[in-house]
Amino acid sequence: MNDFNYKKLGLNSELLASALDSAKRNGNEYRKYLPFLLRGRTSKTKKFTPLEKLALVLYALPSTYENYKQKGIPDEIFFSTFSDIKIWCDNAYEQYGTAGLVNVRWLAKHLSMRIFRLGRLQFEFSRFAILPHARFKNVISCPYRLGEKCIALHIPQGEKLDSDACLRSFASANAFFAEYYPDYKYRCYNVITWLLDPELEQVLSKDRNIVKFGKTFTLLGRVPDNDMNERRIFGYKKDRANYSPKNALQRYILDRINKGKPLYSYNGFVSKDVFDR
Ligand SMILES: CC(C)(COP(=O)(O)OP(=O)(O)OC[C@H]1O[C@@H](n2cnc3c(N)ncnc32)[C@H](O)[C@@H]1OP(=O)(O)O)[C@@H](O)C(=O)NCCC(=O)NCCS
Image 1 (cartoon, protein in one colour):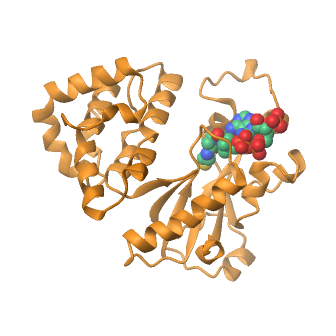
Image 2: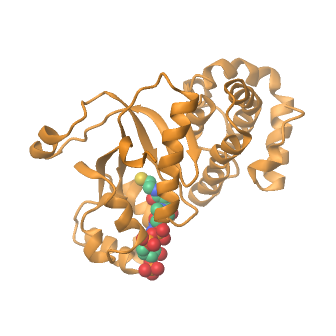
């Protein structure tokens, strides 16, 4: 732990110091959790406070760093992937007013090297998903099988969803998995997100990032996911009475909420061949 450059994570310096202090003091206990975390398992960590959960993740980080080194994965990808610790500490603070990490299960995917951030987007080893309510026609014409190996896509907050950056990200993912995981054969990227809502083309214009991103994918199905989608668009302090929409997207979402219409997450896919250079 001592040699590891935690400052590169971009965490608030007081929070980092408190969490590292906890990691040092409780190292003997945290050591027991390490083999589980490195396999992405967190069921035994529920008892910890958010600060302790952050400390636990920081405690595990040098082991994951070693695993990156053994595979030859560059430092840049490591620190880009783990920039998510700050994002989820910020979210915990916004949602619960608490310093530390709540969503340790998500970070365990990073620790166990299931998720990598490659440029703008995150990529996760996964199985092809088809949401309930997928249109029969879409399922029949889908070239991928439910449950086949694929890479799931995630879209972290914090930066614009610039189209060129996304294209570069997909191209990097093709190259990354071919170089570091050549035995992992997959044919497509699969995503579940509100960003694929086809109505957004009318709400925003065709040239907006979200609409262009949505058009990258073939739609399969959708599922109501009100809480998550509302949080993504209005933030964590849910107080509908005081929502004052600042743009067309927020007006559209608030209108749906007021009319009792669901906020959907959509499921789509794109072939990896699209991004081969
Ligand atoms: C994905 C994301 C980066 C896209 O943002 P973007 O690049 O600004 O998207 P666009 O340029 O197409 O935005 C069009 C309009 O919608 C607004 N908008 C975009 N995302 C918004 C959001 N999450 N909340 C509120 N307004 C948003 C933009 O400000 C812009 O408004 P304007 O016309 O007044 O300038 C942004 O939505 C985000 O950070 N979301 C959080 C992460 C997320 O939702 N991930 C998917 C999880 S399933």
